Length: 224
Image (cartoon, rainbow, N blue to C red; front, side, top):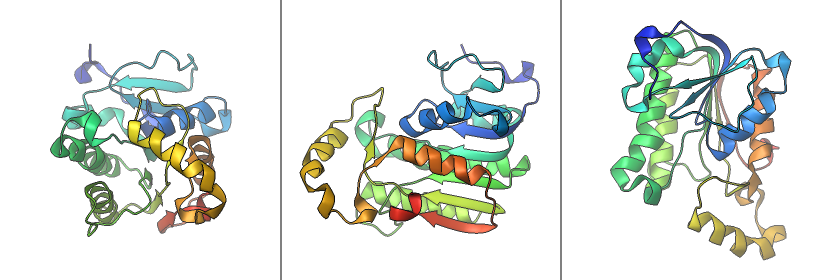
């Protein structure tokens, strides 16, 4: 059952993580739950994450992402980490994929900036380009482009290549990709080398303490 937004108290967090049940979002929470210096953390989730330890600083807020505006009072944070993402196969269609990878992040960004958020950290993908002939890269590029116009004081865009780590859901394309690139790792340009989710989480953690204004893009060696 979803939490009734009318019965919720206002939450102010140091960090809000959207996509907390995913590969990168989960890795970020694993870091932050053991880091008292981070302060209060809110994880926005569709359903409770049983594996997340009961830590006083970490609060799971169960919301309906299709009705995000009704939960805006739960989305007040100094820094927001958006690691939302799916696949066309999992979503069921291109339109459903676009809603998860573009629609939800855009609405989230619009809500949190109204709530006073100054720093937004977006997990995108290598090859993101609104003019790309590849639908996945096109959607990611459109998201980057449009979030830049929202007006965050500090916007950080991370573009990982193929992600390594244990997902709760099986993604055939990723598994095939991992097997194909493994013998050629030393020959792959840095920008396209697979990267472990924990490395992305470490990068995000470092950005919590580093707040240069403007738009910053990280891919390849800049992620490390």
